[in-house]
Image (cartoon, rainbow, N blue to C red; front, side):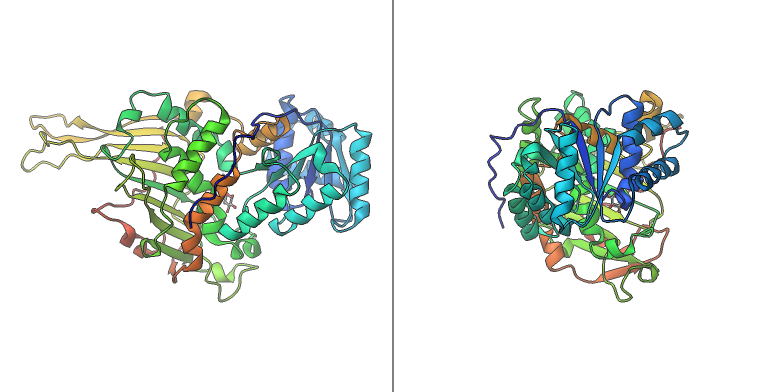
Amino acid sequence: MSARHVDTAQIETNQPEADALVLFGATGDLAKRKLFPSLYRLEKDGALHVPVIGVARSDWTDDDFRMHARESIEQHVDDVDGATIDALCERLDLVQGDYSDAATWNELSDLLDSHDSCVAVFYMAIPPSLFPMVAEKLQSVDLHTRGRIVVEKPFGRDYASAVELNETLHSVFAEDHIFRIDHYLGKEAVEDLLVFRFANTLIEPVWNRNYVRSVQVTMAETIGVEGRGSFYDSVGAIRDVLQNHLLQVVSLLAMEPPAGADAGFLQDEKAKVIAAMRPIDCTAMVRGQYVGYRDEPGVEEDSDVETFVAARLEIDSWRWAGVPWYVRVGKGLAESATEAVVELREPPRMLFDEAGGPPPGRNLIRLRLGKNDGVTFVLQAKTPGPQMDSEDIDVDVDFAAAFGERQDAYQRLLGDALRGSLRRFARQDVVEGTWRVVQPALDDPGPVLPYFRETWGPAEADSILVNNDTWYPPSKPAS
Ligand code: BG6
């Protein structure tokens, strides 16, 4: 299966500012946990200027909807400010009705007219199975010409369905009107990977197969499926996070420098490096399931869905040929952390390897991308004393200490969608490319191995390591 050619020349990465936001699935879980808190933060920063129209099947009044938004914000935001919530609630309206009913769409269209809206953002916080219907219904009332859509992940269930979904959406919206959201792309620390690599002369010369021995990216969560059992059991870790969040991170770590600052050049480089990635070799992949998962509400009692996966990836490029890229993701693990560890090769001669002393460790660059984001360089320094021995020392920075509070990923992405900036959204060829990489793991997943919670997954995950490599536990943040 080779990468599909996508004509990207016509894609406009900056578009007019939106004058309305329409939330499909406005009474659902995503809206509650992420979207209302983000809208609140935008309102608080003075960055929200548009009416917000919820669309949902729930039998609610406008007031019920406003109360729901208020409660969601109070639950998920610390130190809420009543005046800001009031201002946000003033913007909210609800269109209540079935998505298959023409009356729902006429009412939505009339409401947008009443706000003189010409450029709406249609946010699909709904199950993916409804995306095609909603896109077609928008077209039926001619709203597709008056806005753009934001589509939540998972974008498809595999390569073929992602291609099909793209074709369906393209029959209604142009590519530059489809904002495929991956909230990892809204994280400051993930975006910093580009700055770290391409704004520091120190880094780029060693960022290749000549100096890098291996790269590992871990996304570990201590939590289980937390009430999302039936959703999770229909996706599993490969579709939930490996195909999207993890491969987006790998692409930022592995890609070539973009030809220029324009967002299209960034997407081009991501697409190229993903095209150079070999489809997962299932003999270099281990799936696991935490003990107790099958007892979670909504999970099948004989489920073989994975809550953990570890795989060794290969990137067939001049820069990375022969370098193992290990990825592992899981729920119910020993710690919550997202971290990339770049392990450098040993120096060509070991001068400080005295008999009886410990062998010098390897240099590591640890990029913390989760809550405690930051960077740690693990370097060698002389151990005090008469011997020329060396030991690991950490040179690290904690981004929260360096920069203070930064915007939440959903707030940034919602702001981008309203402003019309595609930079932090996923392009069609990149998304299809990532499905191409994981497809063998979906076709031939092999057994799922049990592991206990609060561990690092099944011990068999070690079997995918080559060259005597080991998994690095995530580092602790700088104190
Ligand atoms: C979501 C997944 O996309 O990302 C969840 O569906 C996962 O299963 C979450 O828990 C993790 O996001 P974060 O930002 O907490 O690392």
